[in-house]
Image 1 (cartoon, rainbow, N blue to C red):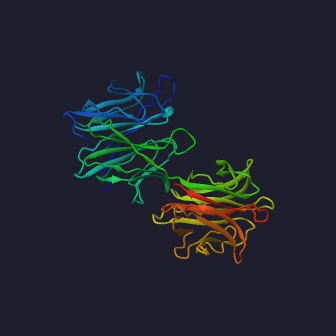
Image 2 (image 1 turned 135 degrees about the vertical axis):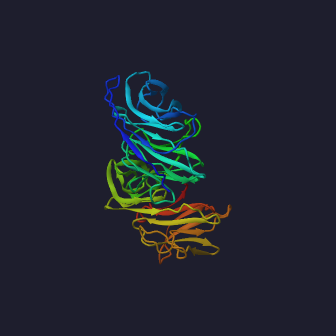
Image 3 (image 1 turned 45 degrees about the horizontal axis):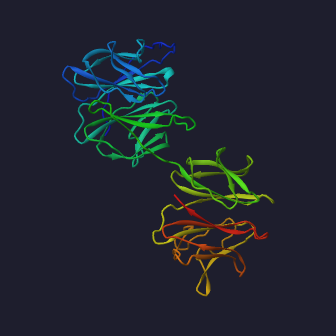
Length: 454
């Protein structure tokens, strides 16, 4: 259930810093929650200095420094203050000029948190009242948005489709939320766009948390988007930095372009991998999920360009296929399996040979050639398919250590062998792609085997 919070807004003064920069006005919003239990007739105040691009600052109460030189992204810890009307301000470390100031009536036996927000050229802030009466078995959570380009953000749980806490605009703090004490996997959203997912966070009973999102959403700068979780327990200094789980798609790129000795793989105009020689595959490379413009290029000029969508944390193999002369080029984008079969090898076959026609994959078995089911009649730019499972990956027994496979590629409906691959060692629990490329007409056609390593 959502914790009931009443917000009050008070105007704040805007003050020039000692270095002549006009700092932004600070709006302290006071939240009617309850807090830890300090000494009677006193309150406690701490500063979360989340203006990450600003210098160290001092926290002052009635003009006196109570926390000196608080570093960016750190908590000052709680400092005692007499209850009643108090002037709370923030200044650059060692400077007398106030950057931010407000007069607040501090309740006795109540804790308060001051939060500063970036950017340094226009610092703003908020004052929130910490909860004191937390229902048994529950935790209290609020979110502060200290990003500079994030807009409105919210945190959801891995099992929820709506906001767990938020949405919260830049330089603001959400209402407090009561939630059962439990381990949660949190996801950060901007609207319906998933920005990040984090490793499980244990929310303890009878504990208040402030989850501060800071940094930038854009990925081209050196300020990554992160979440720092501060607790109001004890001295109020403790925090946990949430561990981000990669959302990237994993993409392997194969150069099967006849006539292209080397190619570059380019995603949205940025080179993902350069100098991929014909007949080779890259390792898995991280690509932002979503719709992407994927290209194979030579000397900066795209020869294949396609718009394709990649799912977060899924794996793909992208083949560049065809011939440069005469021009007949196209990609093959395949989604890979990532869960192996412990008892057998998983093998997929791709026909990337432009003039091979329809082919079969066979292997000697005793005195005859065994036609591998699902790898029969595979045309150019087509992929094997299991008749039993519908998967492109077929279950094949692992080869004995002393008897590796001999794989033959035969023209369908004939006895003509186009190429072979010898000494093929297939391991149980491993995943492979067998493919052919090159031209049959000039004898360059060959078979290749990729071992997928995740």
